[in-house]
Image 1: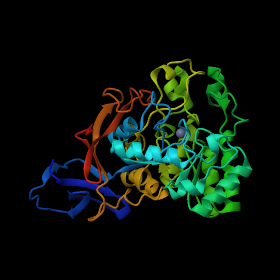
Image 2 (image 1 turned 60 degrees about the vertical axis):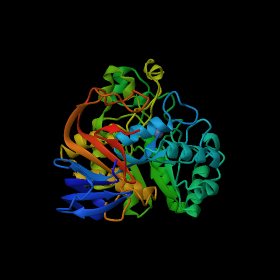
Image 3 (image 1 turned 135 degrees about the vertical axis):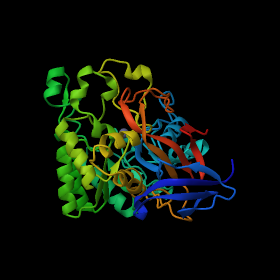
Image 4 (image 1 turned 180 degrees about the vertical axis):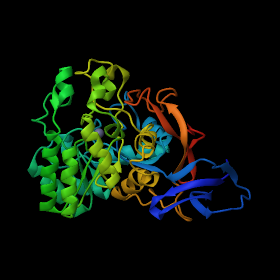
Amino acid sequence: MPDRFLFRGIRVVDPAADHDAVVDVMVEDELVAQVGPGLASGTASVIDGAGLVMAPGLVDLHAHLREPGFEHKETVETGSRAAAAGGYTAVCAMPNTDPVADNVAVVAEVIALGDKAGLCDVHPAGAITRGLGGEALTDVAEMAEAGVRLFTDDHRSVQSSRVMRLALEYAKTFDVVISQHAQDDALTEGWQMHEGRHSALLGLTGYPAEGEEIVVARDIALVRLTGGRLHVTHVSAGQSVELIRRAMQARIPMTADVTPHHLTFTDADLATYDTNLKMNPPVRSEEHRDALRSALAEGLIDAVATDHAPHAPEEKEQEFDQAPPGTTGLETALAAVLTELVEPGSIDLSTAIRRMSVTPAHILRLEEHGGPLSPGRPANLVVFDPAAEWTVGERPFQSMARNSAFTGRRLRGRVLYTMLRGTFTVWDGEPTR
Ligand SMILES: [Zn+2]
């Protein structure tokens, strides 16, 4: 392929540059070369951008790529391919692998696997505690030195206030962020779904919203005490949003993300006992979901993260109480946000791109990602057709896993091209490698 591409007459939504206009974009080698009307094509290959949107490549703060150790669910390569297909150019890989990414050797292994796949930038998160055991802190300094920007025990929640305090103190010293999966273990023991009218009707053990609220409240208090940077991942409860609102008013440094599935589904959808809708934290009532939508619009929740959680078919095909929680998300996130939030007018397209690209890139300090798409900047971008409708599951997934909560759902918005430093990772809707 030639190394010059001209996107002709394409709507560029570039919140980092406060830019939203139909222009021509020339990409040359690894960089955005020119942006403006009526560019001469010269020797470049021309791509007709009529009706299409270009945005900075999406950045995911929370994806489980499962390697090393769980290659029957996903590998860094297949997860990267799913990410590219979904319009992502960078993902933060969760550390609950086997071995756990609680040391530099595992972190380096995941980085090398990501580089080898070459489909998106893979930035491993480090564990907060050794073996995700919740007690002994990992060597945050050493992993930060190796480039790790985010630490989390995700799928576990740090229960000890003493350990969480220490983690936030380290975060402050080494200028990294602590991402908390907020869950009070004792209060949520044996949980199957959100605690409410529907859990009573279905006879499933409930996980009250307070199980999240208690930990978010404690963590905000610990941020006040330490000054360390906190990120609350996959916020699911309205009460958590209110705590974040008060923290922001008090200028306490923290950020938060929400998943497309928590923005879409409610506990009423569990009436079919569909294990693809079993998540941790669980999808909650309509009231909670609507609070999350408003919080995303208001900016109380900063980012959309997928919590891409692939599982093997035989794992999800068990009885509801036996099936592991989680849904895949990388290939449906953009379309879900466009369909569930942008189309009904909850947020505009520029805000959607800000929450899915600009802000997560900023939280992870990925200067090459999140735009602006201006001349001289790395060509990390996505091109999608906002009007294209598709049904989830009608085309094969790029992920190894099939456990999408959105299976069978009609969504609008399809990724056609993804570019990583000027190289197409997706061309005409298909991964290039
Ligand atoms: Zn997770």
